[in-house]
Each structure stands twice: as C-alpha cells, then as structure tokens.
Image (cartoon, rainbow, N blue to C red; front, side, top):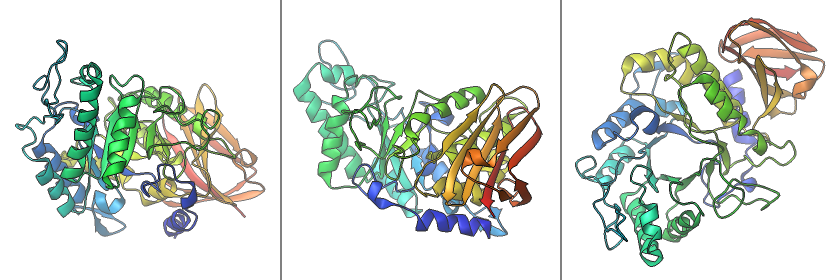
Length: 419
C-alpha cells in the first residue's frame, strides 16, 4: 500500500508548468542505462542490443510478478563515447576530425553498421534509445572551431544523424566546446527538426547561465535549455567520490525556488551501483542508489546488465518500487541536504504536507550513532515510519529518529509521516 500511495504522489502532484526546455520531456527524472561506466569507449551494436534484451527480459520477480528492468522504469538505453571513426574525416590546419567534408559525422561501421536498425531494434522492444555527441575520445571540436562555417555544417549534420536514426535522447558532452557555442548550435538544429529529444547537458558543472552553463537563477532566472544537466565532474567507482558528486546538487535545491525541477533535473552523473570494489559493494551500492533517489536525480545504471549473476545480486536494490516511487515523486521540491557531519549525512525529500522521505548514510569507517529531530525534516510531534529497503512498517517515532551503530557506508532510508 505504501508503494501505491507513493506512486500516487508522483502522479497527482506533478507540476508541468515548471518544466525547463519546452519539449514536454523528463517531467519525472529519467531512468535507464548508459554504456560509459561499464564499457568506456569499447562499445558496439552487439553490446547495445544485448543490453536492450537484458532490460526487457522478465526473468526476475517483484512482489511475485515476473518483471523486467523496463517494467521497473529503466526505459532508456544510451550509447556513450566510442562510436565515431576518429581522424577519418576532413582535416583543418593539420587537425584531424571524424566529420566528412560535407559535415557528416563518420560512424565506425565495424562497430555500428546501421544506427537506424539499432534504434528500430530498441523501439521494437519498447526501449527509448540514446546517443552521444561532441565526443571526447576524438576531440574534433577543436578542428571544427578552426573553420566556423564548416563547423555549422557539422552541427547541422550531427542533428540530422540523431533525427534520421530516430534517437529519443542525446548526451552532449563539452570536450572542446569551451564557450558553449557548439552546444547552442546543436540545440538550434535539434529544435528546428521538430523531433522531441531529451537533452543532457554534460558540461561537467562548469559556468553559470547561457550559453551552456549550470542553471542559475541569479544570472538567468528560470533559464534551463536542456532536460537534465550534469551538476559536477565525472563520477568513478569510489564511494566517497560519489558522496562528493552528490554535494554538487546542493546549489539547485533552494527551499523556495529549486532549480532542479520537472523538465530540468540536476544530475550528479551515471550511477556506479555494482561497480564498487571490495566487500562493501552491495552496502555502498544501496546507499548510492538511495542518495540519487532522494534528490530526484536521473537514475542511469552503468554496470554490465548482461552479467546475469550481477543483476541477480543487485536486483533488490535496483528494482525496489518504493525507492523508485520516492525518486519519481514531485511535491514541489527535489530533495535537499538536512545535515552533514564528519561521519554521516542526512537528506530529505518532501512527499506531501505531512510526509518526508529521509535518508541517513554513513561516511565513516566505523559504526556511528545518528539522531534526526523530526523538526529538522519539516515534521512535528509523532511520525509513523516505513523502512523503504525492508519494505515494512518501522513503528512510531516520537520527536527524534535515533539510529544506533550505523555501519560503515550503510544507510537507512525511511518515509516519515506525521500522525
């Protein structure tokens, strides 16, 4: 019942009027998988098709029902860097590129024989397909800048490639696009196509305001020319590193006028769930997933979905419907940091006038005791608690939520509802 109620919150309190880029997309945080954290530049058609198959396989259960990752909500599969044929295109002033003289971006055909066939395969399975632009492996943006007229031709051809293949989303990286003009031009051509495409501004958290900086209500109130935006630099499979990435979402969580909102989500990067090394992998993966969920971040998996044993192990984390419901809910705020110490952090997300999702996680190597006054999370009096990971009621809390001996990098993720 709690899961159903939370889903109801996500639907009934959605405020479409505060969307960012006016394309009607990402009104809730997108969820899916992208190739970089798993495959880096070694990506190909076969790999992506296998991931599509893994996403759509109803080979595991949720509440006694055969369920796929697509059923859970992971609807996007994205190709990242590594698709292009580096140095095979036009050279300008001695600088190589992967764009032909007519601007066409050159795809490594040995890896991706037909983009349209790949997209059609994903679509036939009900999966939305994502692409990647302004590539970092080849770094040909600097070559394009050597001939601005030709660069514009290339940007138009990039957009045509995306639209002709039928991609549903695009991650636009910032490698070489130091002034953001390449992003602006690409967006111009994408918008002119009339094809609604979910746009990720992957600018590593640089700058503020137009042309492609972070949204900033002081510099440019309300501006957000993309659907999701990277709030900081690249993530890695290190737990404290992910905690650092999480902190970069704080500027977008103003209590009265949050920048992270439907259509314009702060995104601390792809998930490293399953990629941590050592005996705390599952513990750290659960805390990491909880943290991205409580701040309404896009949930983009980055481990090998074709590794059935790994998916089995991570399934209780990535398929938990109550945690997903918190991530997708919108009651006017994306979630925010409540407390931070040397040994733990507390984050909370409003679900209704009387209910909050509250996450406590350890940043310590040793067990820690934590006390969270209900007043600190906008509640008062007594609250009924529900443990989202155990998926069961957790009793009543009077005034203060006390957690004893929270082990290293572990978490507690509850919904607290005032009586």
